[in-house]
Image 1 (cartoon, helix red, strand yellow):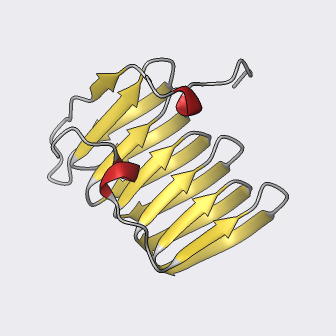
Image 2 (tube, helix red, strand yellow):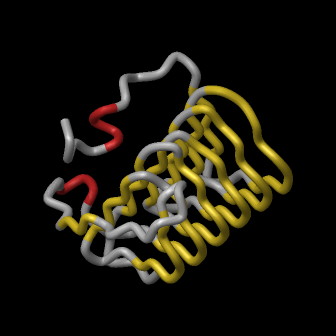
Length: 140
């Protein structure tokens, strides 16, 4: 299970919140369970669960989560207690603090990555092999 994908390793949760593509939110979100962001959110997120930024998702702010999957756009500071996975369509501008990180070929990242103890962290790079997760030919 060491190199397993986050969405494969996380069992289907009982608590899940979905922010749809047509939704724009400014503010703070706190709680337990997973959050799927397909819309736009400017503010802070503090959840005890998985934060999934979908391909149409756009997040600006600071986030504190257990784990995170990024297919869309993120600008800000991210703190994950466990792992962050940046998929090939993902775009990140900011600072990341986590225990493990995996970055797909084609993803964009401009910033710093450290462990929670302040040590630099070397990402694992991967090539997306699943057809349903391969990037569209859209511009970031």
